[in-house]
Amino acid sequence: MTLEERDAKALWHPATHFRDLEETPPIAISRALGSWLYDERDRAILDGISSWWTCLHGHGHPTIQEAIKTQVSRLDHVMFAGFTHEPGVALAEQLLHRAPPGYGKVFYSDCGSASIEVALKLSYQSRIQRGEPKRRRFAALHNSYHGETLGALSVCGHDTYRELFSPLLVDVLYLPAPALANHSHQDLGEDSGATAPETATAIALLERHAEELTAIFIEPIIQCAGKMTMTGSGYYRRVTEAAQRLGIHVIADEIAVGFGRTGSMFASTWSGVTPDLLCLSKGLSGGVLPLAATLIRRGFEDDFKGSPERSFMHSHTFTGNPIACAAGLASLKIFDEEQTIAHLSERISWMESLRHEVESACESVVEHRQSGLVTALRVDPARGRSLPPDGRLGLALRRAALERGVLLRPLHDTIYWMPPLNISRDDLTTLAEVTVAAINTVLG
Ligand SMILES: *Cc1c(COP(=O)(O)O)cnc(C)c1O
Image (tube, rainbow, N blue to C red; front, top):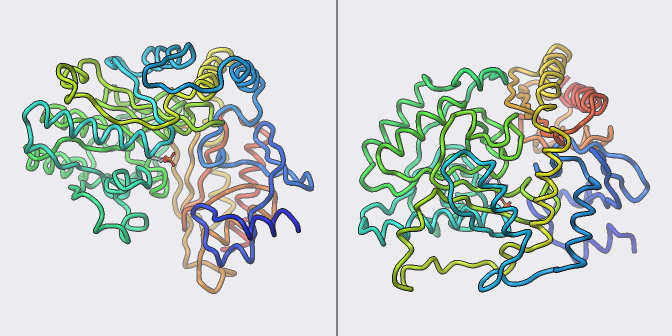
């Protein structure tokens, strides 16, 4: 049996239709290096989306590999209740040192959804213990994505993920967010979205419902799963300031946009705000091992002190795994040694000019936008020439790119680039060229 056949017999893959597997079975990858994946026949595939927005410094970075090897030979795992270890402490210290000012504690977990659950439960429990039981409702943004466990799904503002399970979910107040067309990276420095009509509406809704709200969930700057919608630094600043003025906790989900993606270490930095709780995962370990963290504003823990019943009784078995923490420390070391953030501005401007080139080479691109090293290109589906019979544009584009050796995973009519932060100029150019070819094959 081939690996594909064995896979088809034994496995159920995430976010994959069974029917599609017959046409396109999963590709067996045997190794990866830099921005490239290699299949079993050693065909190279350019990882244009950092393998679901994880891999920061390219695959197989020696600093991360060495750190993992050293750590695994010393201490592979120990439970984090009643025990601690050097990589767990050092990574927490580093995160507090690098995050926007004002955080005092780090709570580890093992995936993005779990870090959201932690934030959600912390906010709720603190209200009970402060004697504010009326504040029990959450606010979230339309088109948002925060993960797929039931709590995280509750605060997703996206029917695709949520609708089927809605009877199981908690009630949420949805607020509008702008979708800033033709947003350019420079706009982040210009307080983008601050004066959008959605901003005023969102703030008015917060004011009207303030007494019942415990927290608002926000993906700063980019709603990644929501078709890479750019909501702007000014929108985030104004909504955060309004919520905090009204005593509503702000829970920032930087799971996708943290660690340099927007051109600064944390997206919150663009807006100069310190959300009460800040969720991190994907790139936290450099994108190579499951790890997540919820950063908690200094003093928040006071409501959890005193009698044992006030404790936060939440745990995940692999909380603070030392190997994952060692990988996280190595990733931060790479940021320092390679001056990753400083070198980003050059790559951001290469990407700016490439996305303009794609637009002029493809008539069907109707809008394109960028924040940091993330670019989205929206095409007009009405121009579809050789769409599959069921009209799934994203799938058709994905297949067309893959045939040309590039991994893209378009979100319906939106193609996006989110490559490793150290992608070379040549690889970025390949990414753009294949994007043009894929668009023009599928859409003409
Ligand atoms: C991926 C993601 C999550 C969920 O993280 P998982 O590790 O998949 O549970 C939550 N929020 C955002 C913004 C994400 O991109």
